[in-house]
Image (cartoon, rainbow, N blue to C red; front, side):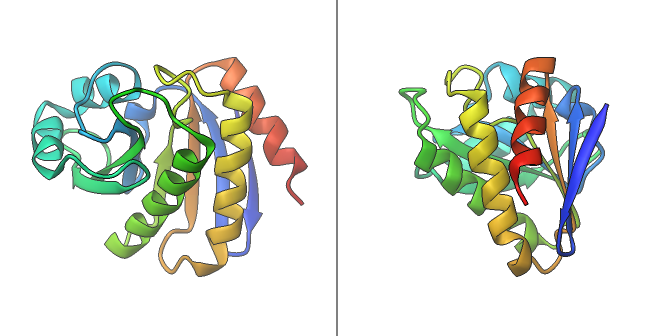
Length: 176
């Protein structure tokens, strides 16, 4: 299952599955600002990529909510993991933090020279943020930033379940 759309030179592709299985230059981890890797996306990345990802991340934290930092990707099919702090220790993401982490993750991937980046639905797991609102925010931010990206040409949104996939698919269809 895959849907997509192109904005200038940047192609967005939706996928359903496990983000830790995606081959991309950068994989985004839905992180807290202390960069500890618990369950959900972080747990999957740590299990598949190895604990060194978390060890490196924690050394770079804490960071401000909305910011992003990169680490090596361990055994993942990626060069980097970008840890996007969509929430603090309160585990309460906001529309602003999701918008900021999307922008900062894309900007960092571009600075690193990544051609492809894979995002989860930030803040919708343990953070409980609405997947529909998350889809709207993240997709719109990618559309707005696409003309400014020098190296990033492929943006994957990897959704774990049919509900998330449908929300992103419906929001992507609304963007001209």
